[in-house]
Image 1 (tube, rainbow, N blue to C red):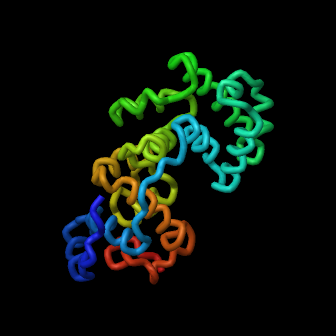
Image 2: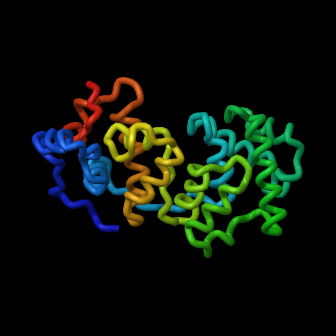
Length: 241
């Protein structure tokens, strides 16, 4: 992956105003965003975060809770059962007890049991190594037909486990992309996944994902964003403070 150009600059305030007058909603090219965020937060090299089934279960546990809670729930689940086959055959109540710290544990326990059983029925065992040889579209389609798996969960498996240039859109990316005008403010989360996947060069998908999350957490927060400290503020059509 090429390093960021050191001389990348945002469009001037005058150019941004001119673009707004001509009805151009996206004031800054997505390549500029990627380069500037990489300069700000540093380059992050991809590392596999686990086998596909592990990342799948961990991502399901992360839904509607903090990373700390979901991480604890995942560790507890792994410690409570010998393998995923044991989880698939366990009573839902036992799974729920193991992941209680993760929030919505009863709902997630049902989903985890269902999807593990479905994988075992379809694959003959509980692993997703067959996805490695599939195209990104094929692998995403398979994952999304599993219970409780949407765009974000499927793409986390593709990106973080399989190393495919897939782009999950979490709440931070969704918010920052809308504020910058990279996607329409009325776009749904599903539409955001489609739009951003087509805009971000495949070789930059991982960098874009991790840096947009970092920027959303540190600067472009949901409430009281630090607009005065934002490196993208001159081109932001939704400057708040």
